[in-house]
Image (cartoon, rainbow, N blue to C red; front, side):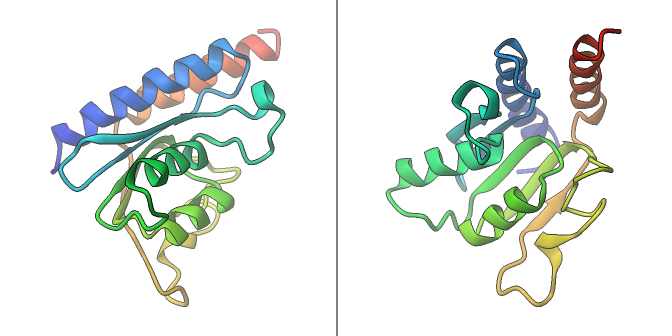
Length: 154
């Protein structure tokens, strides 16, 4: 799966991000695809909605995918997320053994897949997923900028 497949999956993740924005959570959405490209997990930020500091889109999607598969190992799966994962989420992707992480917008303030840190490609870890970045980055960035402009009063 290449090219359009990531774009299609990112559109699904963006739809999740829009739902998060509607509930006053930072608009980040994620999906987990199995090796055949089927969506087996969906997530959006739910930190505000559920008062959960671990309620990041990636963690929510990984939990759902693990539940669907009936195991925590998500080998062969792809995590697709609208924003570069933070250290917690990058670590969760590594621990879940996903084959790859695909993301949209870079996060210069908290990104842990190349921006501020590079957790997923740290050679000291026993698993290093492939990384594909910048998929629909402009759409992901615009959604975040609109959200923060509304919340900062302009």
